[in-house]
Image (cartoon, rainbow, N blue to C red):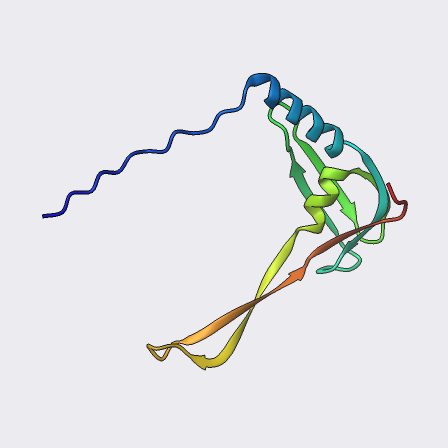
Amino acid sequence: MEIKEFTAKKPKTVTAEAHDEKVKKLRKEHERMVKGKFEFVDAQGGWIDFTYRFFKGDPIYTIKLVHGEITELPLGIVKHLNNTVKKVRKMNVNLDDKKNPIYEFETQSRLKFTPVEMF
């Protein structure tokens, strides 16, 4: 007979002051404005609309960006745009043990925001 006992881990908590300080620092970095050029790689000449809210309690923004537009955006939104990728599946010729094809994924950037001025 085998008996195993599982216990839940106690979450590590941060004091309210430390949490507020970290949020304030993150918000300061997030709201720094960056001027740059927007490129929509998937639909050149097109535009993209999206809604965005990063911090709890902030208003929800609807942002429309046009390909080739030079604009000024907060650094947090720029990081969000530059991390937008799509997965393109490639079928590999190799088969696994059960004779199923092994799929590989390649990530391609969908959106680019290239800073014109260094911050």
